[in-house]
Length: 465
Image (cartoon, rainbow, N blue to C red; front, side, top):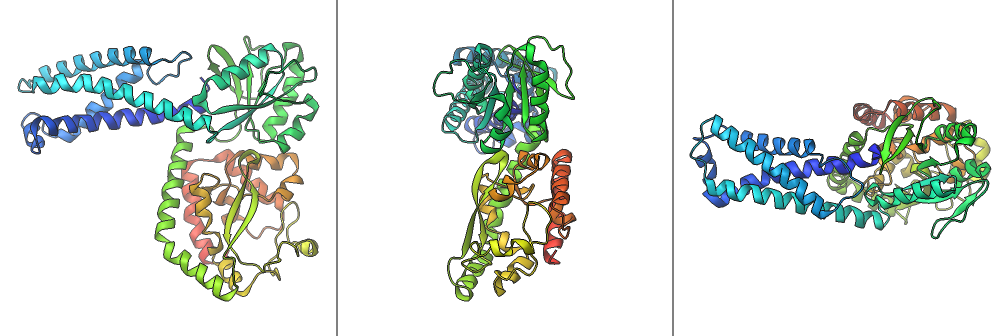
């Protein structure tokens, strides 16, 4: 299975299995022995909670060794129930052996009779519910990733069908490109020849590219793969025999089809899931704690500069997704209309516009910008999943339209409220310097790097940098 997309679901299953095993053990103990259940266990086990944690961890390990975290092409409730039942028998045998080895004859047999069938039933129910929930979310397009398929023949269509059959991966085929298109069934679309790929990568939301051309077009495949890598796209190449080496990549599997994947940018799925958890936690807590400050700023803007309080602007996010970024209004009402007359005064060489003494900024807005407080509403964008706390700054559509090819790799990671260039080169007059720092961040990304940037952001904001 494609590792990048299966890892998140696997990590969620492992966490759910461990947590529920722990909860079940405690709940059954309370039910069987009452509120003093800890006192019942203490003469038998010196640290009952530690023993419960070991039990939960052992259960996850047994499920892992039984292959129950490995995505399967033909999943069914019946096959899952049988596999979990086998794992439960193994868990029961291990538990019985341990209890006998450490001489615990007084353990309630009724408790053990209740524990293992309940463990089997709860684990099965959890997996059914999680799969159902994931499929419902994916069917509604939540967090979907879009794949452009290069090629349109039977092989390309078969691969596209496999992608969409595995709904838990959240992959959707955005369309096909081919110089000699085959008949493409609805609702799939033919988007043009292979010559239009560069244009399509800029005009369509494309997260990944699957190259399914005939082997006779290996040279063409190499050029397309290089073009997609330059823009930070993940490249998938389904092949039976790999007789041509690319710059880097790895072999994966999709329902029995070998796939060679060229992955640009961060691909540590578990770490990316943790990044999202941190984003959600900090954004939610930040909005709650800062709500009095947000309210005070909103009231001040309304009194001093009048409504509206918030400024909404379309920005370009991950792989071209457009969204409305939120900021406190710091400019006069006709600021957008006056931009064209100020473009020649931009202090930045390149795609971005920046002017230190922008005449459109209000007096109170200048104070908010100096303290970076105008950015605080973007915590809502983070909460909605449109932005992250740390990442490349979200660009304006007009800026993206004039990007050089290498600039577009900035769009291969979710934009952030702060980033490496904000704390390193905010005074640089060259957009290329900003872009190079963003690409350096993408290539070097780790949770530790995010934490370092966040730690440097607050002092930079307080110092007005």
